Image (cartoon, rainbow, N blue to C red):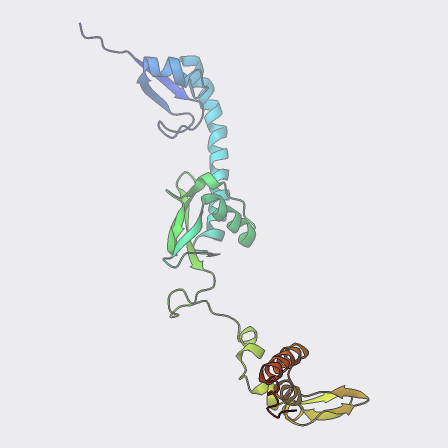
Amino acid sequence: MYYKEEVLKIILIRDYEKLGYAGDIINVKDGYAKNYLIPNNIAQTATTGNIKQMEIVKKSLIKKEAKNIEEASKIGEIIDGMQIKFVVNTSPEGKLYGSITNKDIAEKILEEKNVEIDRKKIELDEHLKELGVYDIGVKLYKDVKAVIKVEVVSEGFVEGAPEGVVVEDAEESVGLEGAPESAGVEVAEKDNGIEYDSKVISEESAYEVDGVEISEAKDEQKVSEGKPDNDEKMISGEENNENIEENKTEPEPDNKKQ
């Protein structure tokens, strides 16, 4: 036997997105009303007494509604069309390390416009994970809506630069490392007011500057090339002694008869 569920007439006590606004009188399934809407203070049965009472409440709600719409419209005028920029770290393929959420957007609006927006009112189906420009809707109140532009750009990359190339400041890129190797040789130096050339020091004989002896690499090199080390002297001396001993021959016997 087919059973048809009864319908119950109710009055919405507060706005409920799926059904309507506070004060609306609607028909719903009996079980839905008794098991969910009425226990959760979303609606009440549409009795004669409740309807009269709701008419009084509704007049107050209409005034409150008008005020809410006015406030939402003012906020909409402030943020509608505003542009928000996020500078983020990305991979060479343009993928974000992390993502931009509706909470991030709400905080950015508060920072730039000093307007607090409930993050749930920002219509973001999924987090932003790629570079680009996005038009994001903000549902301020019922039919009052604003649209903001969110731009996500990469930090360290510039438009037109080869992929993966990070642009550095010119001041940081100029230094001793970029100078020619010969620059340090040809530049004249000063020590206690006495100017001398480092190249000359390395080639000429040693001399003193304010009593400090400056020895040159060239003379040291000559010494090291011309004079063997002590160990080398000892080795070469032993070899000479061995050679002398080997070269000694026993005296020939005297063939003269005595």
